[in-house]
Length: 264
Image (cartoon, rainbow, N blue to C red; front, top):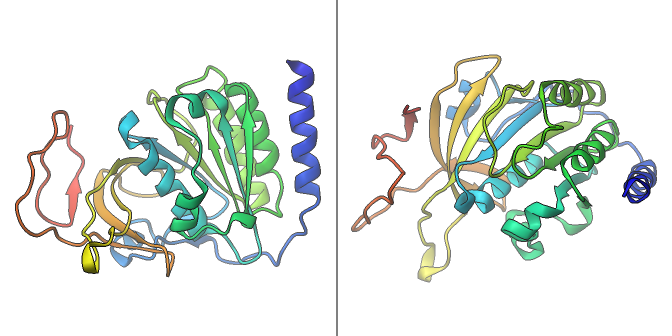
């Protein structure tokens, strides 16, 4: 097993070494493209920072992954690539990344490097190797659950590596417990209800997001957003018309304004 892990890390190093660094971006932050949210974040999320994204439930895994993908695209400077490191057990539980779905979000397949690791420790090792490469634009690290290797010290190493390289790092977690870590922001993501487009075409991907933690500001607010893949920006979710179905058990009602306070 150790030999296999060494082979994975060596292959990843060779892949990263082949990338040529693009012109460094001078922007310290990247926004979501929605003024109401970006203003609350002090202009956006820190570029070269560690940001945690939690799926509210297993049923929201795809929504959390979509939100992470959209943030990666927002953070991505021109000509850079994204490394996505996944734990194999997560694919067994929730399925593999779906290339047409990523393309539907606006991802160019050639801009994504997918790495699969056997366990949580291997996922974090491969992830930090990628974060240390300044040629990349963003790294998504997706361990399954709450591996012992993902303690505060490990998150601190990820945060420091991201700050040194300038690579935006997204820690995507499914089936996970809340634990203290060094992430600058922590988001909880649920799947939202989208408004159908003309002629009944499927609507834009929709998300209900809550900012659980914000080291540089106030947390506790949430928003209902849609992702516009053509312009790569978030927008306020379109209001739904007609009858509204009953909310599922375990999902409390929300105020009717476009942002809501964190409940509980």
